[in-house]
Figure 1 (cartoon, one colour):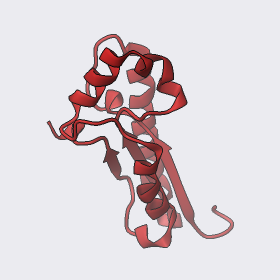
Figure 2 (cartoon, rainbow, N blue to C red; figure 1 turned 180 degrees about the horizontal axis):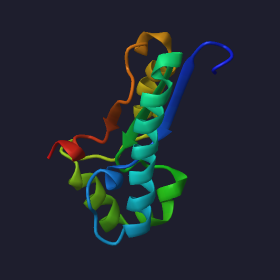
Figure 3 (tube, rainbow, N blue to C red; figure 1 turned 90 degrees about the vertical axis):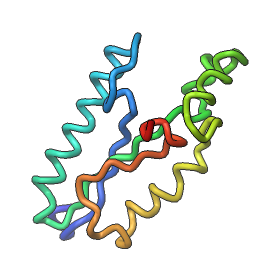
Length: 122
């Protein structure tokens, strides 16, 4: 990206890296590190026209969460945590990812873009 004169790096963080969640110590620590890495990289590379941002998805119905979400009670609990009252889908992430990868986001540097159904708004 330095040789080509710019670009976009998109990190994937988590609400657990922004706020404390019980029983998620290692995961929360790693995702908090992603946010710190993103911010440092954003400051370092912005002068080189490299945009660095983070997407923070809430609970997304993906294979990574399949075991946890297979239990109907867990599924309902996770869906109920967000004001949108539903789980996210991969399609919910597509628009922000495309935007951040495009030149339309040329002034977005060091941003944390939540796609969490409002979870981090409360």
